[in-house]
Image 1 (cartoon, rainbow, N blue to C red):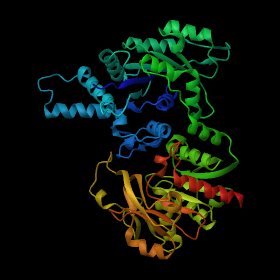
Image 2: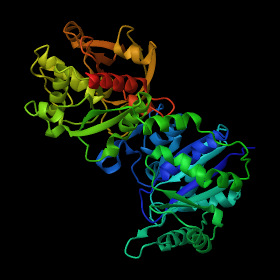
Image 3: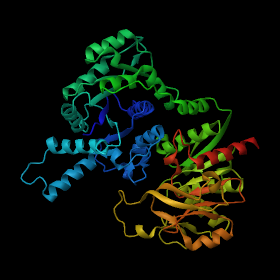
Image 4: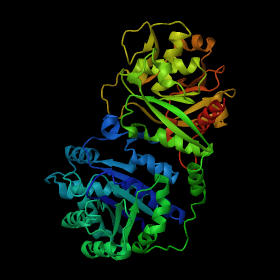
Length: 537
């Protein structure tokens, strides 16, 4: 018999309260207590996955080892828990409906009218329990996107109600995250928004077992008593979540509030082993007490929404803590850069990262940025499109191929140094069709990349359609841009670097996806170290 327990995290009053961080923090505490835990995200939008969504709409698209394009919350889950997620950890309404409609077309419901209840809710329950049924996890935490009362999330809430009834309350509990706002004019915290939010949840047949209340001010005993009384929970099940200095403080704050203890009580699990968080707190301590500060430029075309580069900025934090350095990010819009203003916009930087992206907007700005740091010996890391821009810049300004470009930017090219991958040439559909997921790469020993990884074979996650054109490899290498990482199966160039430069590396893959608190990514650690050395000059 499968004894997996389920914890559902819902949200009320407003979005962006931090359900993902609360879920990840709880999971971290339960993991520290000796339980195997995973987290999944249910997203109420009808897109099949976030792969086709504009980063301005949804922040970054996170990619797993098995090639799933997922919600950025999965990045938080991996960074906190230090275990990989998969396709099963992110479910969208689009995927649910697609699956049910496909079954209907195959005749699996022959004679039946296909309805939201039971067919859609059954599919949701099936998806929730895929991870639990593997037998790998004691506890599965499921975060439901959006806020209660949204039309989109109603089938998910109904599926939770059914699961609680089917499994029993000691096997499936609900944590409701809500807001207790402070009204400055009245000088007090207001509980009414939370009461209304819980009432909306209860109208759908679900009673929260635990309330986590986000607030800017301390929630005193009388307010906890009031919330408990009106929301039908025990007083000790009202947990305050105050604004934290950093998201990495939240596991400690939730431990202090007893969230993990209350959850284990409800699930009738032993809570004898105490979370130590030793390695975690060593990281937090280094992060909060840096010995130096450096400034890294991040050149991208979605810089107005910092969540578009969430994994990169978190990887900076991990690598910064390893180097006992605070990494300040200077956000630079690639469209604002030209060869004429690059010097003034990039002056004073200790390092530069040219970010991933798609399309031709802001491309010349990225190329201008690469040229400036190459010529001025400033440490450089180019990721995916950033690596491709480095190849184009080198081809134009060192090889003298003035018309060098990528076929993504222009179809008829004299020098397509970046070209559409062979297997992509017949692809017409956009969603989930890129080269995705983990691929191997063999590294040349005498290289900066090898110095960082200290191993000859690595596996990294990809998300691209275009690649380095091997027809130009000989010329580029002879001119000083070395290919130091190659995919053993396809011969695809994965990493390039300039040996004569202090630290100049471009990678076709996305190292930021694999950086975690306990395993900062070696490439980011090496890049930040080089930038730190640059700052001391």
